[in-house]
Image 1 (tube, rainbow, N blue to C red):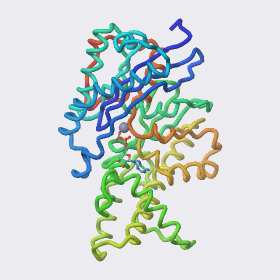
Image 2: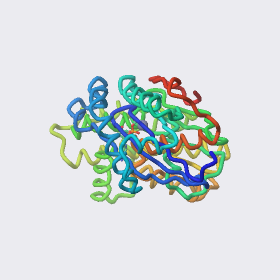
Image 3: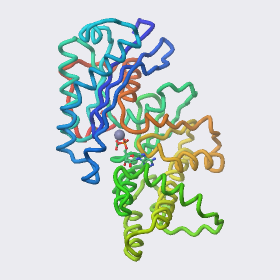
Image 4: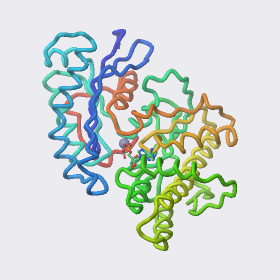
Length: 366
Ligand code: KG4
Ligand code: ZN
């Protein structure tokens, strides 16, 4: 990388978001998102109460080229390029692509598109794992100094893991969920309450409403904190989900707004207690200098607040050592994929179009 500026075009299609981004990195490694466009399929999957894989891949097929066109157009306007699409792609240095983990049909749309573009435009390719993308969402447009060792909590709809990083691109899984992911539990509880999909933002909102209505210091938890006292760093959310189910069985239907707020609040308290305490315990044990949170659940207002407040009490770290992604980078996006790619280029991990391969269960260290 001898140029003073590196331009990366990234594609992310691992689940239900068709996302493309073009990022520029200056010689100091600072990133800037020049243009990005994400097509969310939420409205299409809502009626199924979750992502319907077959529909997701068909939607990606419909969306990928329009998303590419919009992103390139915005890029050429912002950079005042006045070039044809072909020449815009020519001006980009690298392509980055999410190869997994995720839904295979969804991943294939992105990988085949990236393969075709990289072949035609003779672009070097960076292969990215979706989970490292989430971790690196913390480095986008971020001037915060994040020192190693880093402990990183990824909490999304498909994963809940604690990762130790002693250096860039070096991942050791310290703990993970034994059953449901945190986001999945949010989605299920929301479904039980009849609040719709995706559940995270709705439960977050209902929980905040409950807090405002009730002012009691007499905190008596309604739901358990699974594996909070266990010696390892793993999580479990399925028992918590079942507790909510059993509690609701004894409630009168249709559920009142007040009850929905109470359940949302109590569930969120339980889920965030476990996420925060396990993350801080890991940070203590591995003498972390920074803590990163990421994935859709990292958008949660309670998780962010609790993590910041508990930091002082449970570690020697202060709030400068805690990084939370900008809200728009919490859920799936291509900017985070470009951010990983930059670090892979620095490490010489550059491939060609024929190396691109989708893998639904791709390992973080592959
Ligand atoms: O990272 P993401 O977009 O996709 C996966 O890789 O899974 O995460 C989606 C998940 C969903 O389960 C959604 O309910 C959850 O993130 N989520 C939230 C919030 N916003 C999204 N969970 C809790 N609070 C939120 N504010
Ligand atoms: Zn994700």
